[in-house]
Image (cartoon, rainbow, N blue to C red; front, top):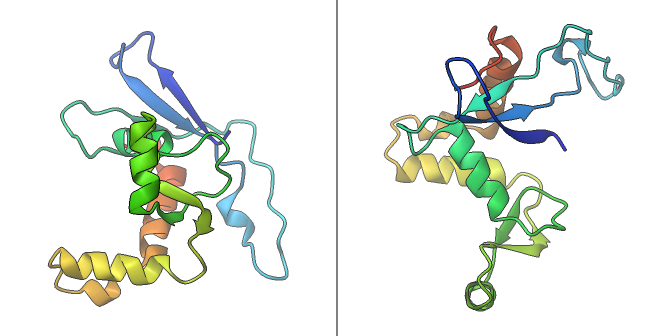
Length: 152
């Protein structure tokens, strides 16, 4: 419900697909353990969008579209461990695109470790500094502060 897939019907991007992202919270409310309430956004809030870039096979639109297609329809969480070889074989035989085991949710403090491992395997020189918080902070800031609402 936070993402809506749409197509531009007019303008310079006519015919191109995009995802509208609904961020129903205000980053400036300084949430903390003692302040868990979010403020309703102002009326002039413009939802950020991720525009499909046909020249870039790794653009955000393509990635999110692929990711959501690999989820089961009743999937409740975002991050799961990969499906076992047997599960993937059953999914494949049934013509299903699912890649994850919905019974094995990735637990707390796992993503950061995986990201560092991934950065090291990619040859990053400062792989120890590649954290999930840094990526999250960058993406949220880009979504919230981008004047035209586009994150592409």
